[in-house]
Figure 1 (cartoon, rainbow, N blue to C red):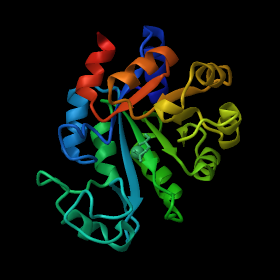
Figure 2 (figure 1 turned 180 degrees about the vertical axis):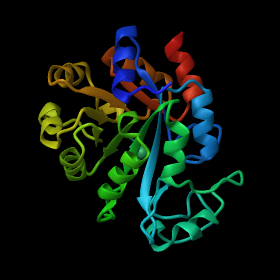
Figure 3 (figure 1 turned 60 degrees about the vertical axis):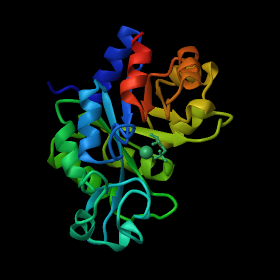
Length: 248
Ligand code: G3P
Ligand code: CA
């Protein structure tokens, strides 16, 4: 069933629960940011899956977390210095490849909301935003996806390009006025680390018409803090276990 990501947020709100997001898929059980990891997160009942996106040297949108290849693949060097074909030949764990973003979008459509983090810091990819919007439009996936980033100017740019796309700003610290940051970026979702969240922040973002999506909720302390703060979505590296904790 096709459901917009906004409708998913509204339904979960009505049910009084946060949306469950598989951060990089289900990396507790499969290599992060691989198709196997995303399929596992969907099977675990996630409402959302999150992935990280870079551009290859030939301008393809590829799914991997780091700017460098060493930690998660058998390759070396920077993602941006390799073509998509070269990246595809690498082993990303358990015989999996680095996915193209298009594959992940096609997997997610009609099943889960897809949260796409664009890695525009510290290395920037000029033109990434244009390619992303063009792809989402071409696949008819704009309403089912969100784009988030630590690079807030990119989010503001995306807002000007595509008013219907859900957008989120990532933040590691606890700013003085998070609602103002949300407004300045034209974003819909304020997305902090769970430890940089508090009940007043959630209240302020809701009063500004936004939603709060926290990461990375992986242990009992984080679950307890989220029960107190009541964010709208939680992203976890352990969707099976943390999903069960929120259901109990
Ligand atoms: O969803 C937000 C979170 O993914 C940001 O941090 O480094 O895990 O991509 P990182
Ligand atoms: Ca991420």
